[in-house]
Image 1 (tube, rainbow, N blue to C red):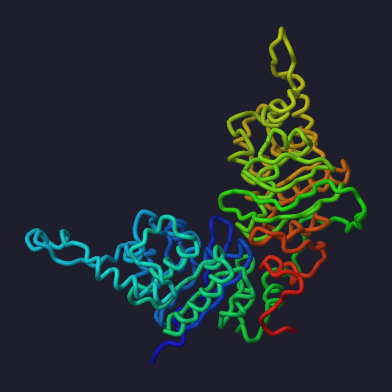
Image 2: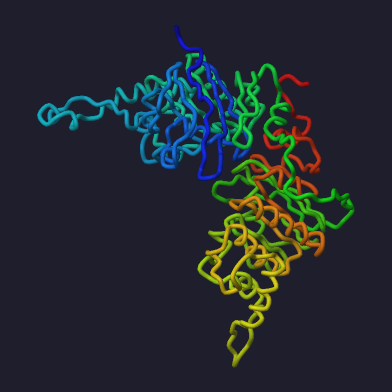
Length: 536
């Protein structure tokens, strides 16, 4: 008798050191089922898939707890190759294609069809030649199954991204013995018509009895294509349901809701003056930043507010400050306190009264081999010639002024260190972040961007960093624009939050908007567009 489930992952637990990233998570997939796996960034989806595919990072860090069953039989998956042998494939969000090869060569890569040659008859099978006609026939069949009419001998280099996504799918379909396919954000790079086509392809694959795990942030697609849904939050299983019994609003609430969880920082809710002057006006901003999609972003930030920018990874939120600050090439219009601000000019952005605490504090935010004091004054010295003195026509560092200011910042921000001369690279993550903030403050900005301010630091340091931002805003009147993947952080300190999806601002919400409103916005669904599904 055939097993009810092609895959069962039972009570999967995974720790990295003291950090538990999965806690007793279970997942059950029936043959021929499209099963959506949902969760915010950091919910545990990627780690669960790493366990399923036997990724080296899992084995190298102590393995995992729980068990995996395929067709009802307990199994061990030693590696991604072992997963492939057992009939598990993945359509990656980031393409795994070789641009210099043809579509046929990519589809048959590592599974080439060969035919005997004169040399192989003498010296062995390793000298057989490729049977290109046979490989092309297989490729044609796989391409037809995903609705692609493109010639199978076309080079991958130069193909539109949508075509490459379908070639990825065709490659997985061509593998013999496939019983489970994982689609990781497959529609993220597709146009609306391509995405609709892909959902139909997925349904066709499922109709052949192949199960599909569908990882996506687009909740309307879940309702349209999936049979069942599993939702993770903070490494735990929070819900299993059938799509016929739910709708996008309920899914959003389950993804985002954190009942009983206290906010990072408690701030009094403020009623900001809607007639307050606009500090930052952004219109039709587009940014060319690798890994980020910023297509057409517009919003206003009022003077004296903490304005949040949230959204899922790669949807554009991090690209916005990087574009405005001139770190990556950008187009559009930006006004700061009523005056045009030049794009593509980092020096001018800093001179205009903006400063930024980068999300990449170790890459571009800090000079790790230099002292705390040199890091704090670096931008001010370079841009405004502050903390220098003129001696016989030469500009030299004013070491006394630098030390005095650095000590003030260390005290003001409670930077835990042995002194201002300590190398910044020896500090903890939270204290490094405070040095980044000190550097930005030393520019005396009127508007401060902070991008992912608590990434990679412990919860105690997170609270101190967030409290520092609130204090700068409340006591010094500084306008703050905060970008974060942590929605709870944004809701705990901001006045309003813009949610970005697919390179555009979907909605600007008050912090006390419902979990459903935030979840829908993060899924790219604008107000009044909650189509598809059963509504409560």
